[in-house]
Amino acid sequence: MLAILLSAAAATADQPRVVAIAPNAAEIICGLGACDQLVGVSRFCTYPPELKNVPKIGGLRDPNLEMIVALQPDFLILRGGGEASHPLRRLAEERNIRIYDDAVETLDELYKTIGDLGQLLDRREQAERMIRQIHDELATVRDSRQGRPRPRVLFTLGGPVGLSSIFTVGRDTFVNELIELVGGENIFGGHATRYPNVSLEEVVGRNPQVIIESMPGEPIDDARRKELWQRWESLDQIEAVRTGRVYFVSEEYLTVPSQRVTLSAGKLAELIHAEPASRE
Image 1 (cartoon, helix red, strand yellow):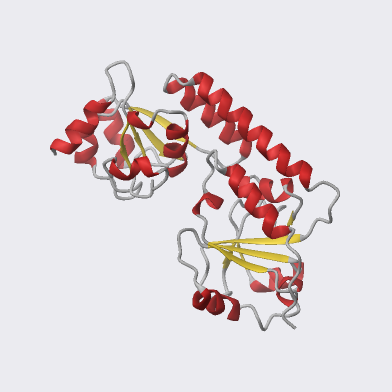
Image 2: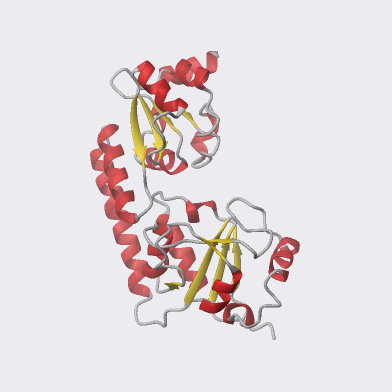
C-alpha cells in the first residue's frame, strides 16, 4: 500500500494523475513525456520499460477497484466506449473521477487521441510534434513503395491453433490502412466488420499472395515456426503457401495503435514486398 501511495503522490498537484487501461494510451502518454503522471496501468501495459514499476490495477474485465481508489487518479483512460454499467464507470461516477474513452481504431482516430491526451496532460506541443513525426514517417514508407505491384495480403490476429476459424482485419482499422499504405491489398479490406471471423474457404477463394500471422508476444523459435507452417503447407492452391510467403510474427506493436504504427508500417512493408522463397 505504501508503494501505491508513493506512486499516487508522484504527480504534482497541478498535473492530473492518470490510470490507463489501454496499452496504446500508456505508450502515447509516455511518448509525450508524461510517464510520471501514470499512477496505475493495466497488466497489459508492458511498453515502454518505464511502466514496469507502475502499479498494475488488473484489466478492463477484472479491475482492482480498491487499488484504483488508493491511487487517487484524476482521470481513468478506458479502451473504447464500453457499457455504462461497467464497474470502472460506476467507480468514476461515485468518486468524481473523469473518464477519457480511447476509441482508437483508425489512423485519424490515433491522431485525435494523441491530440486529446496532449491537451489533457498539458503536452500540446509534444502531441503536435508526435503527430507530425508519424505523418512524415508513414509518408516516407508509402513513397518508397509507390509503383510496385500490390500483393494480396491476409493478416491474421491471435495465431489460431487451427485454420477452421480465422480472425483478420476489415475496413476502418489502422492495420488495414497500413497494409494499403505500404503497397499491399488486404483481401478482407472491404469487410464491414472491423475484425471479422472468416472461413478457410473464404481465404482460399481470395488467394492471398502474402500471409502474415500476428501472435503478439509469443516466442517463435524454429520448432514453433515449423509447427505453424505445417498448418498451411498442404494448401498449395494458395499462392502465398506455394511461394513460401507465409510469415509468423510476434512483434506486439503490430496490433497496438500507438506512435509505433511507424514501426508497424516498416515491418509490414518488409514482409509484403519480400521476395518469394519457393518451397517446391
